[in-house]
Image (tube, rainbow, N blue to C red; front, top):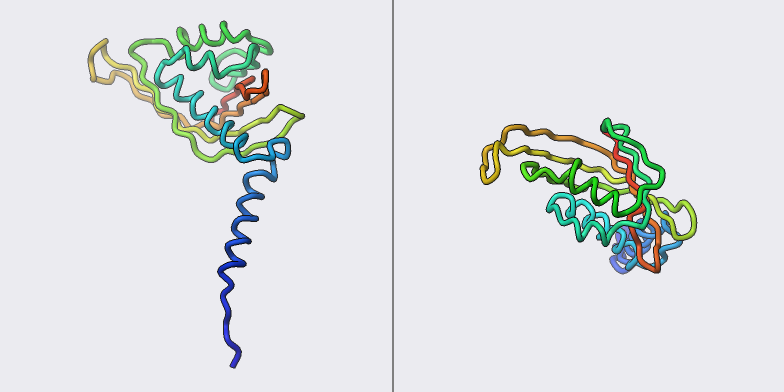
Length: 171
């Protein structure tokens, strides 16, 4: 009778190779886990800055010019909006209302390389928006939930990854 042999060491190596492929196969210019994690953290920080209304943080995360496309959400498309204008818009019309509370939950992400030093991430996002009845109140007057795929462009600017474009699409 033949015996069954489980090669846990081989399985371990196979798992490492598989994880390495998952992390780096679609992002050949990154080549290091630190760049992958930097982009992931940048994405998380971007949405956190909107939810926490931390406009100074947002300003540090975006490139000097951004391409924005909010047509799927009823907004404009801008091919080259200056960073200061983008932050001003986010902090007023889009997310600046003191009665507005948002929460963006990130799901799976898919990464692709468009050219050297330019990466595109497609992120599943579930967002919740609540408008409070009045300042200081916890009573919610309006609540909405949205499921979107947000395409975010990233570019290296002066050696640091920055958000260079954003295009949410409702599901």
